[in-house]
Amino acid sequence: MQNNGVKRILVTGANGQLGREMRRLGSASPNEYTFTDVDELDITDSAAVMECVKAGGYDVILNCAAYTNVDRAEDDEATAEKINCAAVRNLAEAARAAGAVLFHISTDYVFGGDGNTPRREDMPLDPLGAYGRTKLHGEQAVAASGCRAVIVRTAWLYSEYGNNFLKTMLRLTAERPELNVVFDQVGSPTYAGDLAIALFSIIEGGLYEGNEGIYHFSNEGVCSWYDFAVEIARAAGHDGCVIHPCHSDEFPSKVKRPAYSVLDKSRIKATFGLDIPHWRESMEYCIGRIKKSEQQ
Image 1 (cartoon, rainbow, N blue to C red):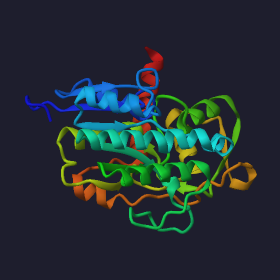
Image 2 (cartoon, helix red, strand yellow):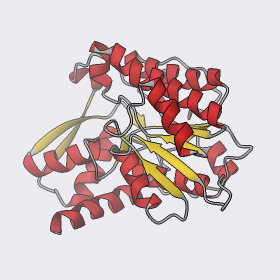
Image 3 (cartoon, one colour):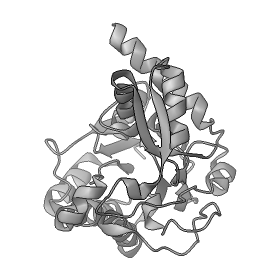
């Protein structure tokens, strides 16, 4: 921390869903946030990362960057590995050299997706496909670096920014008379705004000191993609679209997606005193923000 008590925080991947929510929060902070994406800092360049962190005197690095295209990762695992592992290693090594704390965002895909018990942080890992493998390698790179770190696994992330399931369903339920949506994949939708608030409160309060480790975060509640789609259409007033439940095998994919990816949030709630909203409440809030922005 700087002598004047102001923390300096570097946020990478700042143009993504989570990064843009962090921009909104950071703009009102007394601490100094620096937001970068690939144009400002190529995190796959180890020398550039080391120099940036050293010159900036950062206390905290929040890595919001990731290769998240699950299907494309099957054809281009090398690029996914470069962004989800090698770049993370660069940030971790720079954090260790600078004495900074690294916050890194990971995923439910590090688990296999079988069973029906919410995933705790210490459960066995068995990633499905290239995306899950490369994200697990990123976690392992952080651990191997020896830096102080907080890894937060999340799932089913959406926001008003970028491409995500909620925005796709808003568009399709407005355009089509009927849709088929899988009902045999179950999880907890996560509003990027809620995850950003959680990270922001932990960073701003310095609550990470002595609480390094792996945590899980998603919104409260559980649903299938079908349930989520039905609620999105209801909240948006798209009553003209009939949504049918279907099986995953009706949508052939290069990668098997987790059938069950509910995350147990007990640890993050107990450690940091978080009050996490239900997914339906946050979904309605997000849709409200989207509609408001469309009217402006």
